[in-house]
Length: 492
Image 1 (cartoon, rainbow, N blue to C red):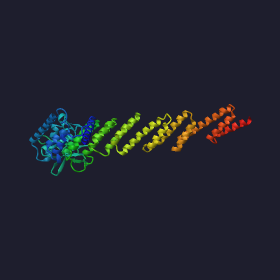
Image 2: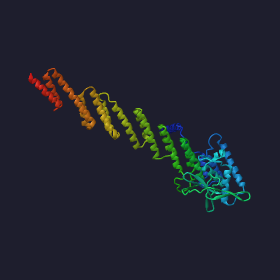
Image 3: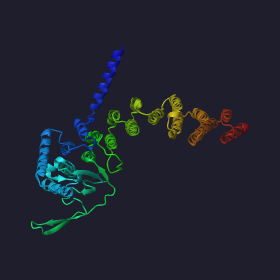
Image 4: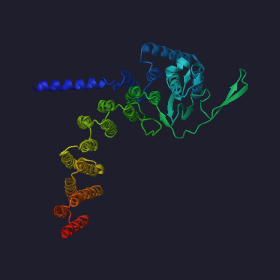
């Protein structure tokens, strides 16, 4: 018996997983290559080939039909460039060698700057580049000729550095003349005559973070994630964030880089939550709830997942309540209860309960309905929102008063309102209704007296008004009627 229960539990888990997969959610498993490159580049132990292959992978040439062939073709282009550089008569002075590599890079590959072109593979297709893709390719070629190349990230920019002895030289890779910006470069003809100058101004990058090769490559993924999310393609961004997190495992330099280098764990959680928020804005509450269960189990966050789940649950219940489907809202909340914390469940329970109470109160039509509604309100009183429960109770009491009033049962209406005020307390609406009912009853009794009096049945009229005074002692109208009846009797 125990074995059967275990098998059944496993089957239910499998079915739940299959159901979640059926939502077409992105995979939460990192690419095997993310683990491979993380291992190969661990501790900043990398060579130019590792960096080149990682950059092409981060650029996503390893996905889709013909991916392997494309990756091999792009890597061949890099191999040819490395071979050409190896055959060149490079200076032994690292500063001069670093500048040569930048010039070579622009002559061979970099054709036009494009702010959003962060992929290295696209450089070989169109020649378009931005600060990240050009800096990564510069690092690959620089490492191949023995340079100590690093990266730098500012708030909205990236570039490379070359360390030569004690000097760390900035390399603005987006500019052909960007080696050691701030220094003037001379152009000379074949005879050594100066023919012109190039000058790239030195920018103030005091707020900057030094990053290693793996971190520089990871910016390709970061930029691709940002572009996908800008286009509302949040599901496609999730696998990139997962890959970036795994890729940087063991490959993140020590020290706090603040806002300049995005923390991969935080970026990943942002991506996961952003997808849920996008689904929420699209009105897909059931998908959000499934996404929280699917992704929240793998990547826990004690604050953000519950907030997202509560928003989805709230929106789902509000929709059902507005559609007059309160019973469905209660069923939905019951199903959600195991997923919600106590505080959020109580808030949602109060909202559904208020709708249930409203339905009962608004359905008062027949004898006994009001008593049932008031009993429901009394039982649920502590769970109901304090702002509306008094009003609902008043509505229920007045609904019964109106039912009795339509039957012209003014006496019964007075008894009902008086009893309700005694039980639940007075308020202006109930007191006003009671005054109206009393006026109606007084008019009814006066009319009864008047009918007898007009028939000259003065004895009957006097008896009628005396009964009325028992019901309403000292009522001015009745005292006048009594005096009128007695005078008529005295004249007989």
